[in-house]
Image 1 (spheres, one colour):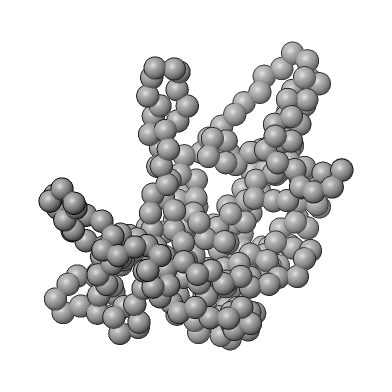
Image 2: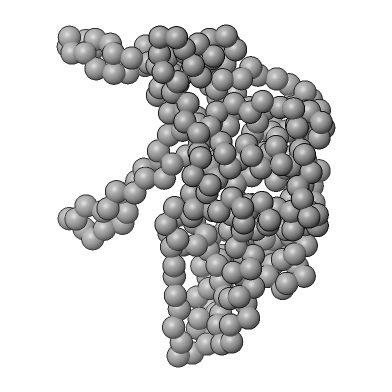
Length: 287
């Protein structure tokens, strides 16, 4: 497995930009991770229209996306790296390395990694080899948002081979499950980067009050964050917390691996089904 390296993004968020060396030093230090204060995720909906016959409108689908602050994202990425090795080892031991294809790199014989085209071809070839058979495609609606936290904590500990999560892992577990989030437009509105403005026709409509490229990479300093985002004497907090006991944020670097690991027992159940050809695809339209 390739060595992990931090990648610090420069998108607008609540935290300052730090160097990759600083991010690496913090993310790989269990004590600093344990003491890290995680910022709220920024939230937006990614939407599209489902395929429909010509002349008809496809059903609208929206997927909630949440992206973490820069340092937080590096920490999630590093802990994904830590969990990847034991997860891949479990797949190898269970004979599932060719069955679970989502969020994993599966090498081609000719070099490089397989794509959805390769996976689709493999599935079709498998179906053809069975002759007269049935194939089933399932879509689990809002799967990331339905992961039970107690079960997820147990899965995490099982991957580490420990009865209880170490303090740093538990802190990351809390940050990815009982996570806070702020709507991205509200996060831009409170510091004054988004709001009502008059267009050239004299109509007032909401929009960015300055070009997007001029919005600072750090949306606000710590004092402004407390006053305008988290709490204020004059304005309510715009921070929401996931308190329902289930769900991880789609868009976080760690969530995809947790979703895969969560289904390991299910993958084994399918593997043990007699006469079944197993080819999983967890994407927008398939598991």
